[in-house]
Length: 111
Image (cartoon, rainbow, N blue to C red; front, side, top):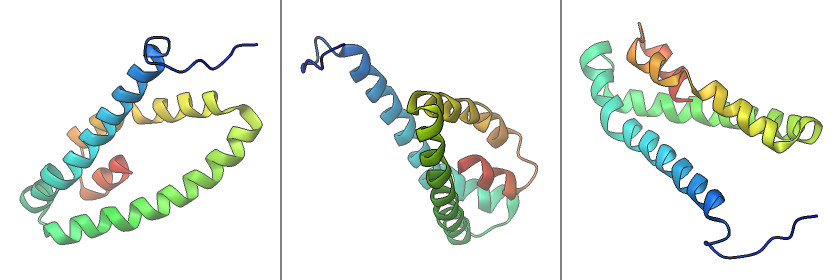
């Protein structure tokens, strides 16, 4: 049985993973607030406010549904498997954003 020993020296792998995940989350928030409203206006003819509102609405719905199922599946299959599965679902997101034929693809990719 392993013991939880505090300190960055002993837990540098977990701490590095936490820093990496926070960098990715920060990058996505920055992308959502700076680049995507511009893309919405120039490429798809959607007002920036409408684009931001569509993200908020879809994100809220997606977050609620995914948290419900992730919680249930985490109890059944384990948290680590659910985390890795979530990362696998995230792999195609940059490609969806780069090659989006319409605004719905971008909304789906960001949520």
